[in-house]
Amino acid sequence: MTMPDRDRSMARRTACRPCPGMPRLTAMLVAIAVACAVVLASPQARAESDQTIYVLVNDEPISAFDVSQRVKLMRMQGGGASPQAAAKFKAEMQKRQSSMRERFLKYAIEQDSTLQSRKPSAEEVKALQDKFVTRERAYADSLRSRLTGEVSPVQRDKALAGLIGDLLKLQEAKRLDVLVEKADVDAYILELARRNEKSEKEFGQFLATQGISIGHFREQIRAQMAWRRVLSRRFRGQVSVGQAEIDSLLTAPTHVAEGNTEVVAEVVELQLQRISMPMSGKVDQAVMAARYEQAETVRSRIKGCDNLASLAKSIEGARHENLGRKAVGDLPEQARPMLANAEKGDVTPPILTASGIEIYAVCDKVVGKSSGTARDSARSKIESQKLGALSKGLLSDLCSSAFIEYRNGIKAGRSCGSE
Image (cartoon, rainbow, N blue to C red; front, side):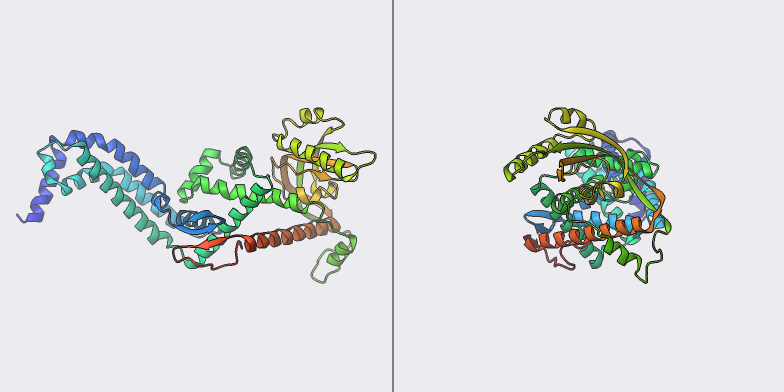
């Protein structure tokens, strides 16, 4: 019998008969099962340990793991990796998981054939466990790379640009004290899961099958929500549409609808509550500043739509109103820009109107189809374009004034913060 044949025969006999070392090895299988399950079920397991810094944005880091997560999210949203590749990867990992016990025992004997005749120490077993798990991780990463492909320079540059933009948005929201609370993000994700006919847990499991951490997904949502609040604070009252602009759009050669032709368009309705703080009599800068500061204090204490009525009662002269469902186009001109892209749970900064100061809370958001006039559709389109231009300009300004340091051979491949 050749040496390899003898080793294989010994491994088969050892796997079938008890030996002094087997009880301790078998006991450790529980821990290994848990470790391997994490490796096989969570594609980002190895990436989580890769904390190589690619970029510093005002001293806040973006790591290699952040980039890999954003690329996976981009692929999921834009159809990057095929469903067939993901299904094949999952099937292979489940197959390896089912045979984990036999493979570990075989591996242990291959590493040290004396285990068949002696009882290994806990330290020896732990070392074997670590080596086995490392090997499983390497196999999973190798298979994933073959099936889904490595991150291309173009994907990496796009992911980095988006991540830099998100950090700048969150930093500006922090500076303006309009950061989004955890409960607001939770509510958004719950609603997103509901639209996809999933529970919150099922939605998280779906992300995991794509190799995406729910934490990374939450941060992207938090940045988006915070940026809407930044735009509301920075540009309140600056987005208005004149009749001449509407006429110009409607008479453009590329515009199909004319005059007041009925069209079917997407309409957004918001379930709103409002606190109004009137200012009567002589109002100078000092009075206005004091009233505005009072309104900011009230806004910071608002918890969704649960306590607006009680807060209004605590302020002299304030009035609480449940406005019910309102289309964005039916709102006062000053409030329209700030609520055009609002989501459930958002609270506007104080809005200065001719009669005083108003604060709106979004209790719910419903998107549907509704017939309306071409003029209404044109107005909404122009408002959205103007707000988008202001958003792009502000992000560009933040990029220009930020301290951005690229590390580990990474170079800027796209415009700062471009998406």
